Image 1 (tube, helix red, strand yellow):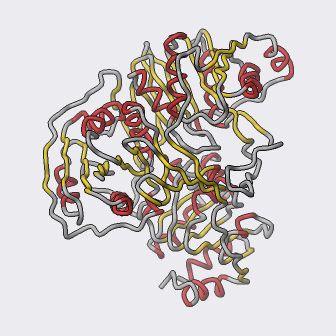
Image 2: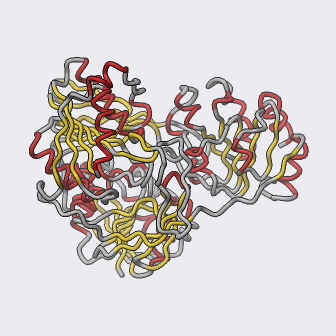
Image 3: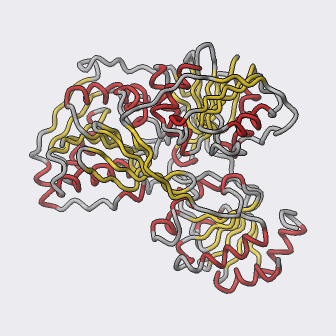
Length: 309
Length: 250
């Protein structure tokens, strides 16, 4: 078995989800190499080389790869796929953008959002918004997979010393160009990697009221998330959405505030270790998955919670 | 500009799915089916482009058994001009669907192909990207805004960190996210008119694609149940439980 992991990074630092990918690779077993495709990404390559159990770090450092454009990165991955049994990327918007392109170019299927490794050919993945778990077996010569990071414990980040190899080939499509981005700036931890997540729903009433959650989050070192209803209502930006079509989170503690608990929201958070629900509607479905439920007006309960922490 | 929209028939998003007792699959017998919500957004976007005078024709295609004609009629009622059903057994894999759509695109020569970012049954999120690769054309996935400017496409995408804007040369493939638009309801007169719009049927074989998958579904299980929790009566009790029972806060 020879596994290639596509590193998740922002050209400056290796994203923690790469450690979860490494752990998924170890569950499959075999030699592991990591591809760092980016621009000015030497620090990322260095961090990748320090991961224990990684044999080789392939670095493709060129402007064509700066924004992880699928047209360019997919062709690079295909070129490096020769002789590999598994190609792994995180189930992030970047991985989901690139990997199906890789699979199609190789003429194989992609296994999306894999939750568990049974054998090197057999995997579990969620379907129907997590209401069913499918076990699938792939006979493709190379398995192209995206991995749900929260389903695998992170591997160690230090102790390795992989060989770093430069890859000089450049794939640059003339049909696509990066124009710009608006990235949310926050000092809080990333939603998918946070130990505690505090999320708000439609019950928050407006965007300003999310400040109540921010204050609780600051005390707990938590990330702040939202339900689709809150994002659709324009209270908060899309990158905060937790659910089937947003982010999948599985923190140690998830506090759902003013969230009714639609199926598609539960799909994104029900693997959390401890779930707390605060909602004034005692019939809200969120209480069916909550370890601790409090029927209360959030505008009284949340400030009280903050005061107690 | 010609727009091709690919749509899928899936279980209605309000229906709670159940796993069959023999664990072979989920039970879809006598379950309400509908147009996949993301596909509906794709149809709406195409129709809006036509209403703006940007698109000249909207063609909608679906791969599946005859039953998916119902969803094609829905798309026609929303404003698509004509439809194509590619007859194939239900549940083809994403790669087969992408190969079929690539053949359709080669024949129809659309300038823009719109798809939903994922179907809410298999939750794969692949077909648009695969199609783009097979056609060797640019893609903009998870779109929340699409603008056509001077033969080029400006697309704002919902990415993990926020929003990203890309410029694409046509022909291009776009997959829709939730906030691209809010689909309209089909009016009764439009539903009636849709019955008269052209709907062609082809088979996968006629398009030269063999539907076969290397991925086998071995088992489908319900997810692990969470054991029922408790109600607390106050914030004090909640904080005490979190500190001393669950031990998740200091």
